[in-house]
Every structure is written in C-alpha cells, then in structure tokens.
Length: 157
Ligand SMILES: [Ca+2]
Ligand SMILES: [Ca+2]
View 1 (tube, rainbow, N blue to C red):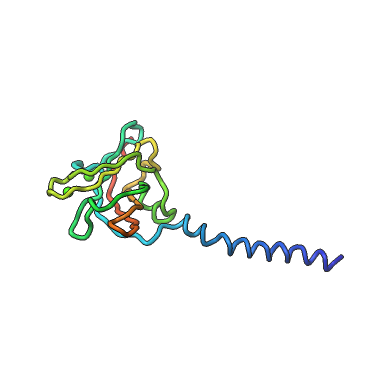
View 2: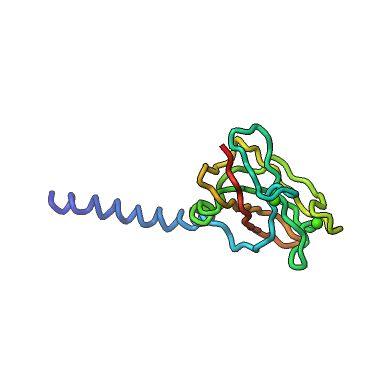
C-alpha cells in the first residue's frame, strides 16, 4: 500500500514533465516576441506631444517611418499591437490590435511610411503611461520580420 501511494505521485510527476516538455516550446513561442528589429515610430504623426484621451471613441494613428535602415514600404504587416512601453517589455506581444493600416508619407520626406490605426477604446494605456510601444509582425521582402518601436504619450483624462 505504501509503495502504491508513492508510485502515483511519481507517475503524475513523470507525466507532468513529459507534458511540460512537449508543450513548453509552443508556449514559449506564444508568450515571448521573436527577435525584433528596432524601427522609428511616430505616434500621432504631426502632433507633439502625443496626447491621447482615453475616453475618446476615435482612433490613434501610429506611423512606422521609413529611415535609411528600414524601408516601411517593403513591410507587409500581418498583425500589430500597441501597448504601454513598460508592459510591452514584460508581457511581450500584447495590447491593442491595430484595426487597419495604410501607406502614407506622414512626414513629407518623399518616402512612404506605414501607418497603423488603433481604437482608443482598445488601448491598455493608463493615466500613468508615458510611452507606448508598437510591435508588428509581417514580411519584409522575402523574410519574416518582427519590428518594434517606442514613442512618448501624454495621457489626458
Ligand atoms: Ca507625434
Ligand atoms: Ca516618410
């Protein structure tokens, strides 16, 4: 009887280890962001400071700018998130999902940029947020790329 009592927990532990080993790589992929490429973003292009009124029912545009190191016109996004910059570092690819995106030269330098739009009501920002990070996943030419960039925000009540 004693040995039976001992074997059951050992068996459970063994199965638990097998289960963990089988599933942890998938979990790890979902819970953390892939290696990212840093890009320059501009929350609310044309505005500075980037005032966000959380009670607003509008959208917040976030532009990924084309720079000498990154051609935003070559990036075709699949999914994009915007989150508080501090949360984004801890929680990975979470936060509000972009509702649409468009190509537009927002800073008038002649190079098309990529603009994501987020419903203000979906944002996980709080009154103490001072910066927000954009994370986007998509294809850049023939490669899959994960991009991220951070800009300041000024939350208004
Ligand atoms: Ca701005
Ligand atoms: Ca531009």
